[in-house]
Length: 434
Image (cartoon, rainbow, N blue to C red; front, side, top):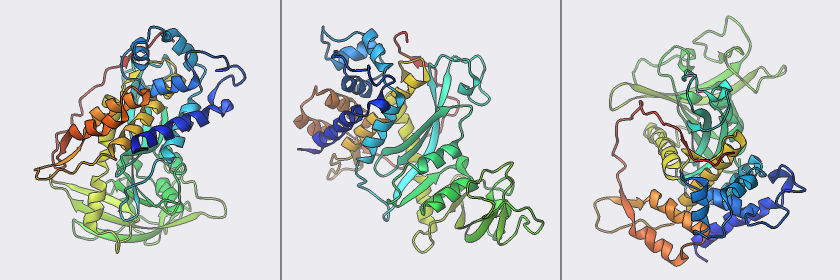
């Protein structure tokens, strides 16, 4: 059995095992999916996995290979409403945790954390679905997708979805941290939005490593509590006790303590008996090629990770940004077929599972080519299209590897484009009336 059949079998096995937990999967465990119908629980899940941006009617026709006896879109909608979103969440965790961690960096798994807004068709006037500062008359209802992304293996290891306005990225990261298998060493890499005493303490308490960008100034960030060298660039080590105690001796340049005000900073590790939490870390400041400076905080040891390695590791964080683009535009997370939050959640988790399945298949294709100017990689867009056919059984397994090896694209890691911050995503809703 080749790797394609192996991972297809793992995914289908997870679906079959999931169906046995009826209390988790169905709103009415005693009656839902009991009668024999065209659309079984397994077929509904598989249809979600391969679904793209067309209407439900067209997606069902593609899934059944245009069978005249296929179930109607109305029947599909009735069946999907019987399934709880927890079923898709559980399937994501079951499948993701069964995937191997083939690549590590010095024994560490590199996990990038970030978030992205999703424009959905949820019918609600609740302001919690509106982004901060967004127009009140917008037709979009936003959910915020938080994710942990394995940079080297190219898969999402955890996601957390919440309404955009009430979402808290730092709290979401803490929740995702505790979903990870702690026996695997990991480095959590994050941007400035995750600069938090509480986040750092949680990662440290799990005996894991962090690498987080912090504000490069003395106002409102970590740096205001630390004495800094006179040089513009530095790599300094500090040991500090975060404390809730209020005392005049804890000044901005104190060499032992960092005072934390409960009003502005959450800290889960303080109790009446323990009002201090000690952490050892490094602060690294370096110049950027385009001008300006960047500042990072990490607990990676100096003897194992040089400043240049730290800079390169943080640069790899950008992979999660490109993964969001693939997830939205190639896998189809910009398209939704439901109008209720629980139905939208079904589609979000289905798309992420499909992304992971496509990436794990692409990761097994040999990309080495001799006597070529560029290194080559598998075309993810083509891989995702083929993987949909794999799950529906509409393609011969023997032909898949040849097809992917023949359609590779050059990898140009140094190529960069100016970021377009003015782009506005319009809603793309393709749903039957639900």
